[in-house]
Length: 468
Image (cartoon, rainbow, N blue to C red; front, side):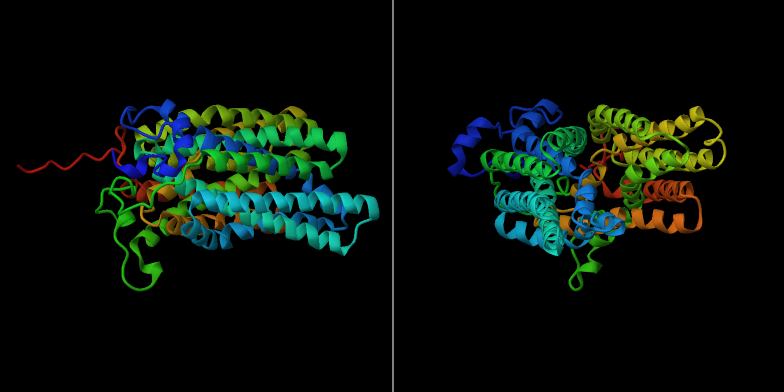
């Protein structure tokens, strides 16, 4: 077993190495239990804590913005900070990680994010006591930018670390579990935030988020063992067979002519509708539901059931992906999401308004269908990022992948807004669904040859016979 798949290589961290099994010699490649033991404390628990903190803040942030004097449009636009940083932030984040290493970069930015959240708590608390002014509004924007920048470093740092720590045969399970922790955090966070806001006011949600980020940073500080610098990547670790365009050596000259970058761009075109579908769902479904006469309590219950479906799916989705390949998961995911959004548009403009029952069937049935597709694709974008990037200097290549895939979350709300200007908002679902269906066909055409050869299934490629 090659050394860069071990979680720890640094002799100065013997205490942590005693706590975490870092050798795979005694563990079979297919052992998911070994994966959980190796990544639970350094990756999964920090992810759960961080995701809980961020999602605790998300529902109350527009309300806080309104209290600080932002208009409705400006309060809604604060959500664009994350989307813009998702496109602009990965490349500088990759440079920071390449310079400092994943652990140091995550610890430093974890402290900075905690300070930004504490700053948000002080800003909101001061405005509540003394009245809101422009300084409070500028301060909130600055705090959110600080949080967003740190979030980019954490996302990239964890992906880069897992890419080197995990055997390719366990890669999809590792990343789907990573996505699962984020989904669980999306359930825990708003619940904790509601309790904090009810007990001490909305400013307390910033304090809660800062506490959870502190816990995540401490876990990374203690348990994420710095890894040795990666040497030249073996073909399998870089996600292909060596003769595929996704892993070919870079060309001299412009970086955009590198075959790896070209392959990433082609795959990112197919994942963009998936990410658009994900980011639009929390906005589109409630708006369609409200237009059909459903109450807030009913819509919230629908989302809670859908979240439970997604959480139940992330483990089997990762196992399925590792066994049958990325294409066998991403294509059904896109087709399911596409059908779901098209059905939403059709039912909403035909029978959705005919009765409360049909309104519930329209929104609730589609929400479950979308949850099925989204849960099946848990971790798929992050897994593809590891498949399409080489071991050597992975953070820099992952940064390019994240920049490409950051376009989808930014374009999704824009698409819904543009469609809603000229047609009923439900028709935005029809447009998005059509994009997902087209992306499924595109991915089926380009993906099988540039991702790891699955052990079984229709996308398994027979190994070439060696000549004796």
